Every structure is written in C-alpha cells, then in structure tokens.
Image 1 (tube, rainbow over the protein chains, first blue to last red):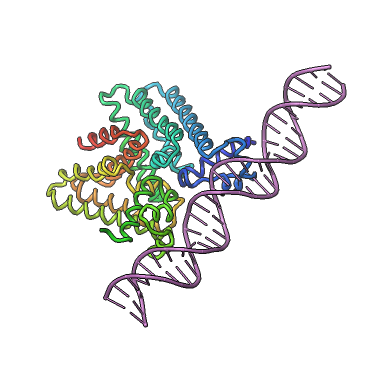
Image 2 (image 1 turned 30 degrees about the vertical axis):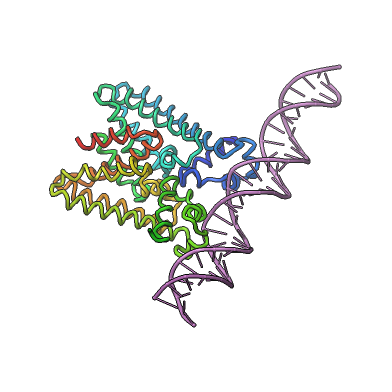
Length: 176
Length: 176
DNA sequence: CAGGGCCTACCTATCGGTAGGTAGTTTGTT
DNA sequence: AACAAACTACCTACCGATAGGTAGGCCCTG
C-alpha cells in the first residue's frame, strides 16, 4: 500500500503524460485516489509544486535506470539497446509520452522552476549518452542529440499514429 | 487588413503552439484581437471546431511549401535542406513548436476529429518524404520516420534548452 | 428589409487556492 | 506514568477567477 503522497504523484504523472501541464487538476487527482482536492494542497501547496515533484521523481527514476544499464553492460555499445528500451517502455507499457517530452513541448507555458526541472532531464540524458554510450565517437555531442531527438520524436509520432510502427522502425535504425 | 476569421485562427495557432490544446481559450483570443469571446462562437461554434480549423490551415500551408520545394528542386537530394528549413523556421522565426508536434504529444487528451486532422499531417509528411526526398532509397519508409522524428524531437529539445544548438547539430547530421 | 457580424448579458462547470475544524498520533514536561 | 501541547493528515465549506457555451439584441451593408 503506497502512501497518499505517492498516489498523488503517481496519478498526476499519468495525467500530465496524457495531456500536458494544463490537463491535470487537483480535483481529478483527488477523485481518482479518493480524497478531497483540498487535502492535496496540504502535501503540495501549489500546482507548480506538485508538477515539480512529479518531474523530479521521474528524472530520479530515470537516473536509477541509467545506472543499472551502465553497471549491467561493461561495453558502451551494449548499452544502446537497453537505453532505447527505456523509451520503448513508455510507448508500449505505459502507452504514454515521456513526461519530460510532453512538458518540453509546452516549455513557454510552464512555471519557471518546472522548466528548469524538465531541462535537467534532457541535460542529464545528453551528458550520459555522450559519456557512457558514445564514448569513442568523435562528435559524441551531436550524435547524442540525434539519438535523444529521434526517440522523443518517434514517441510523439507513435502516439498520434496509434501504432508502435514508427517507434519500431526508428529504434531499429538507431541500432544499426 | 486580415479578416476576423483569419485573425482568430492566427492567434489560436500561436497559443496552441505555445502551450498545447488546453492552453488556448476563446477569451484570450478575443482579448488579443479586440472582440468579444462570444463573437468567436459565431465563426467557430465549439473549441474543437476552432482547433480543427487551425490544424487544417497549418497542414494546408505545409502542403503548399512542400509543393514549392518539389517544384524548385528537380533532384530529390536537393530537397532535404529546404525541407529541414520548414522546421528551422518554426524554432528560429516563430520560436514555437510545430503545431502538430505539440498536439501529437497530447493525442489522448484531444477531441477525436482533431486527432484525425493532426494524424493527417504526419501521414502526409511521411508519404511526401518517401516519395519525393528518399526516392531511390531502399528502406525509404523507415528513413522517413527517422527524419521526421529527429526534426520534431529536436524542436522539442531546443525549446526546453532555450537554444537552437541541438536543432542545428541534428539538422547538420541529417544533411550528411 | 434581410441577413451577416458582432455585441451585451448571462449560464453552468470547473479551476487553484484558502479558512477553519477535527480525529489521531507524537512529543515534551513534570 | 500522566497529561498537555503540538503536529499530521485529512475534512467541509467556501472564495474569486475563468472556462466553454447560449440567447437575444443591435447595427451596418447590400
């Protein structure tokens, strides 16, 4: 049995990943987990506070997965497939966008502190790809951008197509 | 002097491209163009009606640009740079996401008819890339997906980074 | 004088947020 | 050990603001 705070964050994440920042509400979360919307304000005073907590947990979990990938795969080249699988999980299991992907697309409509938290996710991924995935490449930075952009973009296209086909084709290309 | 309908659509597009479907409102548009929000309902009865009109005009204009590119460049290989420039325009001139990119990421929160209109944009682009950009390639479909995903993804990353650097690196890679 | 294009005025629903209360638990003091 | 103070985790009830949408009137033009 998870705590109220965890259930709030979990449900908020689900709503944001479905429709973005403006598509989640305290009332909808409250109804979903069976408490009053006012009670959410006890744990997260404002909407930005909650959204930042959601993004923070999302990034933290992502970092943990990156560590697992690094530790389980000694050679950088072995790490690409499991890295791609992190995004495959979003579209195939969660059937939702990457949280930071959908938020990034709405950047200019987000509270400033939330922008910074989302930005951190991308900086962190780009740096990790360069350092632990493309170690021996010359233009690692450019290739890292290409990889991350392809994955985020293919998630978005797969959502609107209601099919994993685009994601599968893109990930197969990336693996070659 | 543009018509009221055109000014409504223009302003709605700007708002949607900034914060997504839930971030635009009849009242904000009305205020921006100097009419009453009720007057917008005369031209577009419901919010989905207006959003669909916005997406339709966006796609229609995109198609026109694709025709120009095709007609101005006899060889498929010459068409890549101007195609990329369509997306460069979004991030460098408009300083906004691709309308259909941001809407695609919110797919499951959109009215069904709007989903179809957004989907049409991507189907159309994928088909055009395959037919007029990668004519001689074997796996044209997969490469088209890769190209479009890279461009949409790099827009989204550039927005959150508040820098064109990622878009520039990705587009340079695509051109090689 | 008919109708297109806009207006005022208003509706209901929902939003984020606040005020104040309460049951149960924990903590500090004697 | 006993008791009071304080804290946690909720609750009900409400606020002003804003959302999309509707009804009906007014004015200008053909």
